[in-house]
Image (cartoon, rainbow, N blue to C red; front, side, top):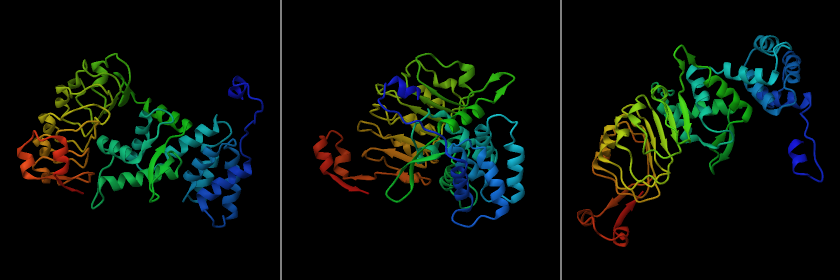
Length: 361
């Protein structure tokens, strides 16, 4: 109403919360689907629905938390978590859903989402790669890390801790978004890890020209950089696992990145990098390399030493010899073969080498 008044709208519609009956129908659909719900569950569920304060998000979240729970667990949630004297019911419902996540690693994956600004659409594959870099996805048996990440994604979506933003032609979730209230919860949990030595920040988006203090840098695991990076000493970020550099006008990677021996995800896709330095092969822990830049990128022969690389995103650039050493590779969008005579003549004009392309699959 405040916004409508500011815009001097001719007519306004005052939005109100859902009725208790509507909230109950959302909970019922989330927990039992189209099946008939037992009367003993319905009595408890209707009480819980009144605590949702007419908010569809709260009804959806609590429905996810109640799913596959016993009658005793429903009663416990209604009596202990959502009692009338515990303050804001919506906040309690969101916290309940988080606390009911089955695995500590799944909880860490949820908190990791707090790094993205409110309303930001997050690509599902990108998010899973962040979780991999953080070490939250430990493969067991035949399950790959990516499969586990996909399962975690589905759990968070089912519990409405993430919401679907885009779906591809095959029905897969292309990108997701976090509701503002859920984002507040993730931030509050992420910011509650203070220690005796002060607050240890694990995730950060840095969009200022000021430097990050060394005592902060040494605890960072994920860093998204949106400012110029020339004065940054990346050696201070000794435990960094994921690094995204989004400063467009940089054409060369700083040599100090070479010191990031624990780096598992490097994204330089928004930069104007012309070539990857030879020392890129020293980053042996690298799992994801997004070098799909706006320029034709020359790849070094040392790329073959990235034996843990699982996802390689590049433009239509010729792959160096020894690419077969990357036996863990899961993603490679382009694989371009070149005639031997062109490889011997690196000064051939662009039109000529584009015609000599003999394979792209």
